[in-house]
Length: 112
Length: 115
Image 1 (spheres, rainbow over the protein chains, first blue to last red):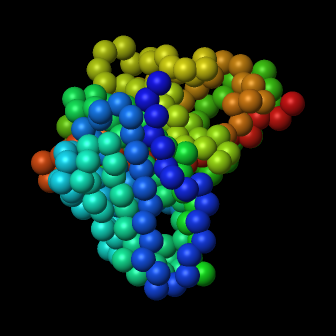
Image 2: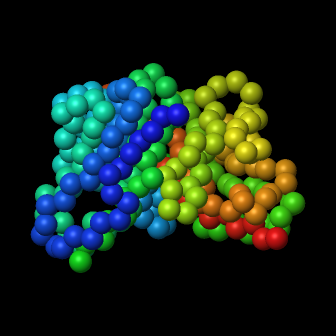
Image 3: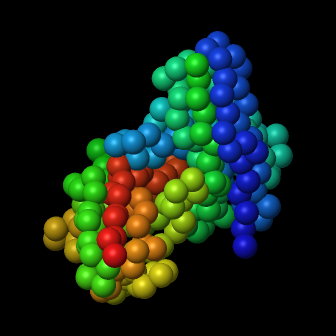
């Protein structure tokens, strides 16, 4: 089975901190995605990447950046965390030319 | 604009009864439609998809979904609900934007199956 691993299950950070959320997939997938999940809003796409060193903005990129230096790893960076970034963050991946995504278990981030 | 609507925040069903979780969509071109399920403290799991072909699609755990082009709907169904089906369900549609394919998700519907 494909595994998408998010390094932290729960995180608590202070306002203004720089926060790194890590995601690793083990099946050589080209495509990787970061979503945030909020009640009543579903999942919203923050950033995605279709190849190493490539990144594209999703629907809500403000306040976030990403890094993909290796194919298996896609990092989400909160440059200066704010309380409105408290959320569940989900990473996903899939191979090019396919339709289904494999999701990680999520990181619940609380910014205080 | 592309969108997915799940009109019910929560659906309550008695165990053994049939269940339906509703989804409607708006997308340019032919829709590629998906259902995912999320159990507590877990990521999303793929249930089923419609790409083309038969309007009734069968998926995991006994779920199925019916694509209706005229009503732009893709409702999730199961003939006999189990308590273990209680979870959060998301409908999603693939759309093409900015040179890339992306998935847009509905807000989610919480399914509660009572013994």
